[in-house]
Length: 432
Ligand code: GLU
Image 1 (cartoon, protein in one colour):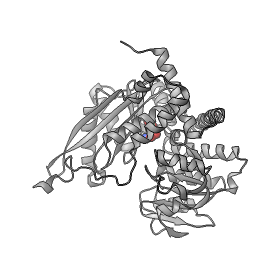
Image 2: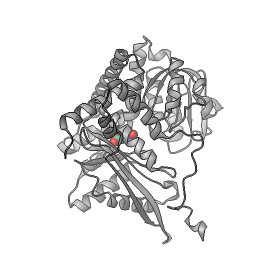
Image 3: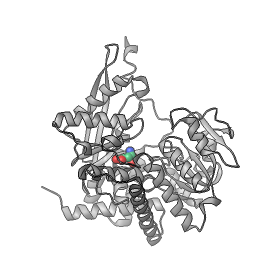
Image 4: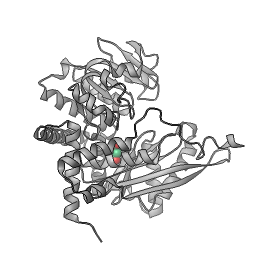
């Protein structure tokens, strides 16, 4: 009888062996920045505490009639700069703790790129690959129904994240709209283009990663066609980053996904790899054109640019000393733990932090929200041009702060973001 429950709410996530808590990683960096800014203690506590943490039980009737219950979360870290914004992930090991960290990261990320949003994140602890499309739809609609008092185009705006996509966003939009009795496209971003999505949104995170890599290379006086690149993860972010750098003439020496990695010192044919994986639907395994390597070996390769675009906790205190890249751009959220930061700094590796490097996604989410509210849609060329400009400006702002205080780009990004949110909060004051 007990076994009957193993796919649902009753399954505790396995311990994340050797992992450092993402929330603790975020707090370590936040504390450092708060000290530089001389942030007063009350302000520190305000900004360290999520404004709202919602946990719900999401019942699902499986296709065979069984009822299972999953845990769902939405954490609003803050809405000081504007409505809160952030993705929703479906994953068997997502926890409230992780969602709390990711929500805070969204606050800092929006502030870094000067997008007028606060930060949030959501998740449902489930394995979506076990579900049929109808089950996934029912789960999504029920989760959305539980969040009707939280979501809203002027309140809290979800987006895709790990294992959620355009279709999931459409179900959220439809459920919210049916309950509002009017179509509210601006309640989520990352929608299909025919339903109020933005051109360029799908590519935006990878495109933003590449803009920051090109900006970093130009600071070092290096041309993109003279560099070697390793990319961990070949999903939306990794494959787009690899393709755009390949188009700039960079040599992509290694790529990988869950099935393992591929190395070729002469460079991998990225368009062919994208074709082979059919836009991320098929694993890279079996793709010719390179020697097999593991994900761990990929991280340690000697190369100019390393882009970890897979998941959290990939570079940690155990392997940081073995990293041989000159520049790391964090395509994923939190691929480097706080304990690895110092080791990489000692090795003089330039790290473009996640809250800057992968902020292209939320930037075009902002464009999508603006277009939905105006009912006027932009060309792809306009989206990409504005994205490039915002990412480039953000990189320059953060670079300047890092030079002013003689700190890393990550520390500078936190200083910039926390200063912006704290200054705004001071002006607004605490409502009592
Ligand atoms: N989930 C993405 C992120 O972590 C996008 C969030 C959004 O567009 O709201 O940045």
